[in-house]
Length: 586
Image (cartoon, rainbow, N blue to C red):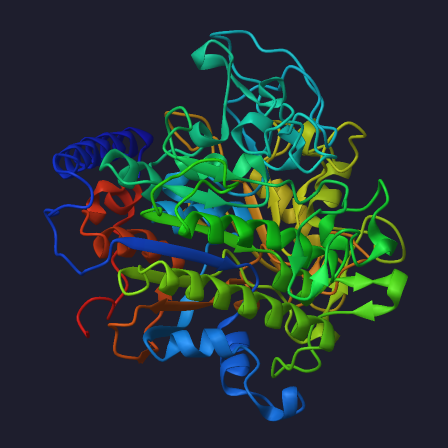
């Protein structure tokens, strides 16, 4: 598809989406929508990051050797009794948090949304004014000039101060949009070198934008201020209430917070509270962190803003992500000689992972109880899924390929050594973030190497008899257009599409971390398969085995609220459908 044709399609989708949103906003909220009235007035969307369909099967039914063979997620199991359980749900490719989150919010893939990874690359942008908190160097930008092309960073690095829980926002502000430092944002030379805020980095609108325009009240809680991208294009105001305690800040005691029976002041795990630690370094401390967002949800259900500061409507659309299960799946906490993950390939959780699943289940039970006590349970659709999975479930297959040691090579390292990688992406760059590699490798090339020559270098390192790079499959040239727009600069290509994408063999990761035994980002089944449950007390229970995608959650949410799914631009562009069986069985 030519760039001009894609532009025309996008413009047409934008016109349809704008018209639909205007039409739907004509009446009061909640009112008689132009679509069907399913009796749903609120949607609670929960992402249990890392949670596979297999994890849900095991915890809801019980598995030998855990909890005496009895179920260990009773609250999730109860929701299944009035829910639709999708067994073959796939998240985004790449299966990173950023594209995974945006799939849920937009109904689109990187092809339309443009979100490939937290840290990726854009050929049409220039550096930020100053270095980011993670060390991505600042640089120059000339309005109207040919862009340099630069690494994009939409994680903790754009915080004013990523070491503190509120991201460095002014005193008395607990984090969110106010924590973003505009000087650390990449700039767009075609727009006068304006900083590219997270909500404008994404190309298409979101469920929050559609609901907000229709008069609904919107709220979301997540792990970075940068994930305010869920607001969609505009000025960030599509989110009426956004809460984002920085997950990569230094862990500190949380007065008045308890994770179940566990007090969080001081933090329960004092081995992981130094200046070099983050909340994800501890099986216990991560539960305290997630409880901050749980408490925000409970407060919102009670009819106040997330911090309880003032009265507010119970949100029309709201939710949060849990990080605890993801940490439980992959952390090796050496300070207490404890390892997470799984006991076997059947998905039997270790004690550490079991504790995280039980914590999340109990928190969801609190939310359900709050919905009931505030009289909105019957009118709330609860959607539980995940931004991404985690690979491998069979922990014995984990293989770390790093830039040091006897196995020294990743795709980006091979190509950087040959001078093929832009400096801001290069693993050889001391002022960069490193390459975009986890259990996937995304490579953007400079003008020194052709794609064909770069692929030849990688293939030379991955013969079947001695695959030192762990390469499983290479996508490039026409092959990459199966997944995304063709790479390049407009009008011929997409400035964000990588030139080469490598999916490694099962279990191989390029992150280089010695603190993990699993990772996500890749295309493997364990990376992309996630649980998906839609629950409402008026639903008849059903299990769906038809393959579905997390992209289908966004149009389904709008349909549930009586809004037009076609108001989403990515739904228009990519033809995303409502989840099967969602509204024709109850």
